[in-house]
Image 1 (spheres, rainbow, N blue to C red):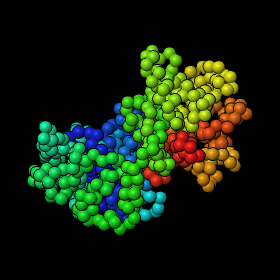
Image 2: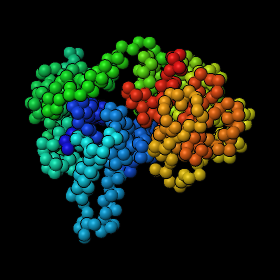
Image 3: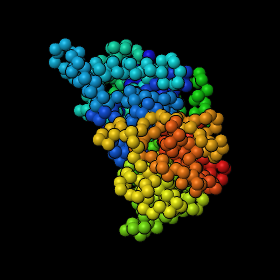
Image 4: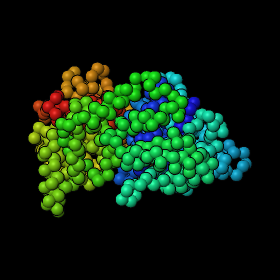
Length: 543
Ligand code: GLN
């Protein structure tokens, strides 16, 4: 087993996750089975209770793990399926150590960060690295370990120490340390500054880890002088100083690293499979797309697009498949509401919605903007504009239909109006009302087709069922399904009990689809998720 440990310095947001995933792509191109593990040094057990506004989206895995969005990058780049243990958090490791202490496993010893927590971290890394992630039975050959946060943070100190020791546990020759840093440009002549990188490497080396490879985020490729200076001051060879400069799309990142000789340094032959060639084709294909397709994204948090990262990626995968350049029109849902106080914001939101060829309402929690989302669903339904509703997006469409087609005025979800009459969406009976963390209906569940023939089934292709990932507490009111269906909103996919609505499709509409699950978590470049593909095909007149 080869380990690639990716740490970061200077500041966050350097694209450490993309760098780490790209290194994984290169290893995979060399024919290795690759897995990955992300360490998040926060005390939360998992990302499930964290606001997407602060941390970006909560990514959901097959096993129901609610994890950091970087695991989404790994799944998409490496085309693997990870489990909840592939995201190690301080909350998880401390819980494990404390549980062992209560059992008496430490035989009277004082339990300490070193060695008990650091040992537990190393055991975890080694164990999880060996779990197959590509759907086969064989253990991976390589594991990318990404350390979240920035070197020097108090939170990450135990992990740095664990990783320092880890090189002796598994053999120095089996670990490659990659440090991701920033090279800013200053002054009128655009001088590339190496000092921040010098400092962060010094700090890392002070903690006992000497990086083998430096990856520097910069706006332009590093000059020869910058590389040489960094090599001299940071104790790495000049060949091992790479830059990840600005490129038109992220699929160029593995190619850029390969061109700079990363494969030679890691001693692998990235050309030994056809994978990198396909990757190249994809990166350049994306650059050549010129014809635009505008999709309205009606949500919250619209100033922080990381909150919808996988949805954006899925739209891009689908847009690529229909040969169009994706333009997302971000619409803050509450701006659509009739009582929104700023008239120009309201006008602007409606103009954006109306100029879009398709409408997407993504998942969400809490009542802010819900009425705006309902208006967007109504607009799409009545104007024959293609619509995809995901989770909450399905629920708002059901509320809209209930109010405006079935005539149940004041219908709502009990999430937003607990005592409303004729609720279109209700709380699921099996869900905990006392705890928030990890208590939703989570992870991969089957949806069984209820009809022989419909658009969304055609898009999914063969099979009697589809497995997609869930994350919700509410569902379409089972008592109303008959009324919905008799008015044309057909629940073409249901769960294994035949009771719970999973997919609806509106009869007589070009594309009006709602899914209770989150298809965005399983979309891959080159293999777009069917509901997204349907939206993009319908929006570009190809369905
Ligand atoms: N808030 C809704 C529910 O819990 C929708 C959740 C979601 O969109 N992920 O059912």
